[in-house]
Length: 359
Image (cartoon, rainbow, N blue to C red; front, side, top):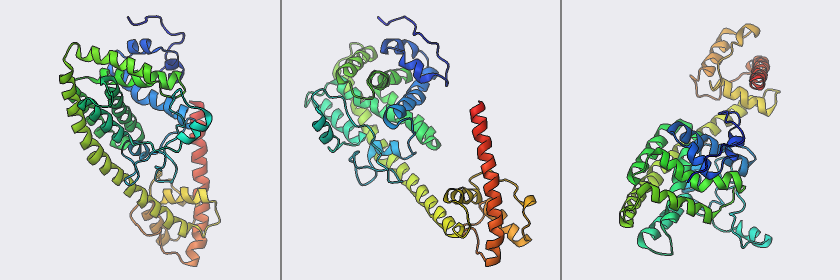
């Protein structure tokens, strides 16, 4: 029977999420997940925020990182070696919570191969379907929960592609014969205690017990052979997700990143002639490529009409030139322009910071 005792604090959505959910027992959480809006918010926003806090000191991850957790980086599938596009290691979790480790063993374990999520899912589900290696239904569904967990978080980390991830969550739910609330329950069974009560370390026994109870509530007294058929269908669809959808998305993100790197390199070659900081060269480059809202710089700067046109085109993104070909006279004029832009962007940043602080 679920506990009905209310937590000590009242939930203020978006304000005290982590404090509130850390006060909930797993049983209280199941009672809370009574509608799709609450469930989806918990599985995506709350768990992602807590994961960032536990594993990354509150820092978010890049848009490609969660995809790499699932399928690797396109060449390497060892999570302890995989790096994001900027060259940073994507795995920040140091321990897995197993009981038999001593300090020396922990250090060694950090160097051991860690498979991508797709490989773990395929291995566990295949063993379960074949009745091998002692993998039972709870262990299999623990890996299934990881697929949903990562898809919910991809809606945040790669929000540009959110609709596709939503479609895949729905499709995978259907082949398992479960609904959105049940999918989130599955995620919470594995991750609530781990993230909020166990400092991010695995708690295999408790997690598997929670999942076994859910499987029984999902499927009742259905014979396991029918559950296995649903798991088999899930794995068939997951293959498409892993090897086509996520691979294609990672390629697209890589191309976009390389293009952005090229643009920034071209900007730096031009802007290095200006006596301004590296940070402001980057900001001005983004500004000139139209990646920030246009600010009317012209009233405060006297610019020849021809050069004014070139600047306008650059700001609107109508040229792919390294801003434009510069004469010595242009450099002198643009130095003035650059400092004006720097001043305006600085004011805009200060305004944004003060607005956030006030809110």
